[in-house]
Length: 463
Image 1 (cartoon, rainbow, N blue to C red):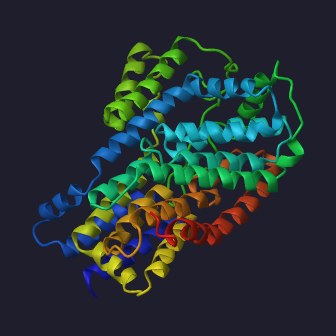
Image 2 (tube, rainbow, N blue to C red):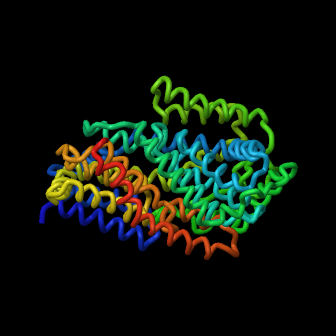
Image 3 (cartoon, one colour):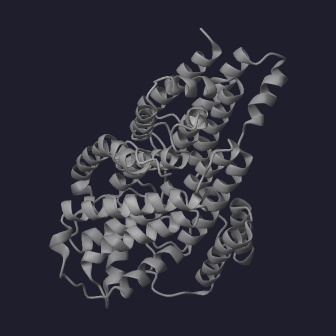
């Protein structure tokens, strides 16, 4: 048996192990890298270690740490809650628009660089508080938040976008960050219209809330939901195989548990945080500066201005997600070094029918991502499709966009990151209902998203 086949079996075993056991997939991937590297790479143990660490994604590590560091501060000082409050006031209390506010706020967060699980973890408690306060179906609210996270998740500033566009650039494939972003955005907006119609959105039309006390009530409800399991967002895992995620009170004025006053105005810290977020966006978009280094710089500057307020910010970095992504990317890079990626890509291309092979790739991405982290799946599957795409028989932009969408819209599964976070933050008496509905919806996306995106983006051959 060749080392390429062994490395594939090891990758499958890692996913299975991380699915059935609460072990971080990234940690398992690093162990697999050590075992496969020792078998396949000639030389001393130091040579093996050097080869493995050569594939460690240092730039991606900085992006993950920097972005989650910055958004931990934004959540702690109430900047995110202030944005939600302003959005609610801006629509005049129209209840039917509340799920859409959650959709677009979450999309905005991920579009500007927030890691998808982090954005969902920030908004889900707030959104579920609104759902309780205004008798909105929690499935409608949860799916709106998840779809919003996916809608903004492929912007050039986002982690999904960085991973996807980086793989495309590294392999000299034709790419279009704009089409990738807009494709995901439009698909998720249309998908959320379907969600709105199916899960009680029409019943909300015409209902108007009293905005004079709404922000306070909604935030208090959200805090109550989050505090039912003190200090944690119960059962919120970063997909199978990741460590449990923790969340503190939603209004935040610190990183400690407990109720906090509602956030309805800007203070100095929130104003400075808004300036920092805008500065990161301008620096990355207008001047092409590194997103990760910008985010770290912004977070450190904010910490210097209020060191005692933000002393717990580093502990709020999404370390399980960092380990997950860096571990799986390191292993995939090792697979590339020993020829596994070329081997697998040639097997897909050998199907003989390029369009059918493209559909198979999309189904693989959707099915695996429903049980694991989308970020890890993107890091693994796009490189596997590279040899197939280099043959030029299928449009690279269309297939990569279809694969990205197919792998991300299934995040609504309660076995995946976003679905687990929403389930954990659902009201106690409706948690089982939310779990069952998300499971049905998530697996329906596994069946529906690949052929739909394949028909729209791959079959016409215009991308």
